[in-house]
Image (cartoon, rainbow, N blue to C red; front, side, top):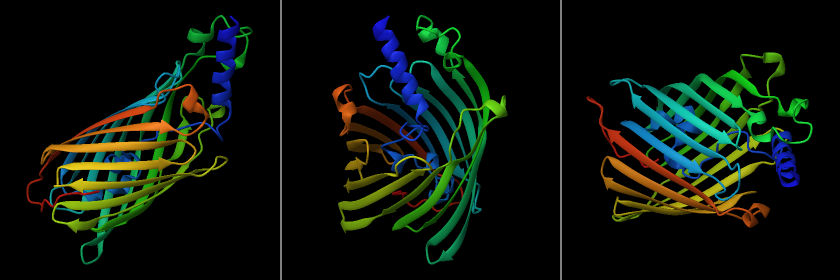
Length: 305
């Protein structure tokens, strides 16, 4: 009873301090899953892309987050319009699960030689469930404590982003969860603050067999410390990406991504925490599988971003 009570207290502390807690899913391989970061990104890619990603965070820590996503995006025929969709399942702790679907619409305009500006919006619905009583029914006071009351609701989300890019670089600003609201009980909804993100990357050709791509991502939520990811990748023989990342307030990461052929890419990353959590967990794992298909009537340059 004593250990369960402690776990309950620790879990509720995590939920009760949004300034320190993770409210939305994070990704180490964000450079290969960029639609989840910025809806304007999909205008960068001239092909139809299907991406599956599964992240298991803080392995060995009871109730650690895990996230699965399936996303699809494609240009619309020969226009400057792009559409996308994403299905997401995000679990935090042993009792909180959110499952949702989102649609993305993006338009781009040419602003120079091989340089574009794109604007994207995304929106959708998710089902949020928090079954506290199933896990903490024996905790002292849980029967009458409002903190342990089960919650089930439908939530709506609206996000947006803008991106400037060419075949050599990209820079974007976005808020993929700008308006996030409990549609079932607006007056009693759990507070979710907008996440603002600044992202950029650059591609440098070293020689015919080697390309270098640094990336960074800065995340800001009102009331929480600003977090930044710095990443560097090498592309070897147009076949293998290898890289490393640093995420402030969280972890160091190593990642690799292999092109099984020109249309299928498999990626893996491993995070090692540099915080106090390193003593109670065994790192975070993330796997990614991506398929690409050409779109009739469009030029098909390789997308390095």
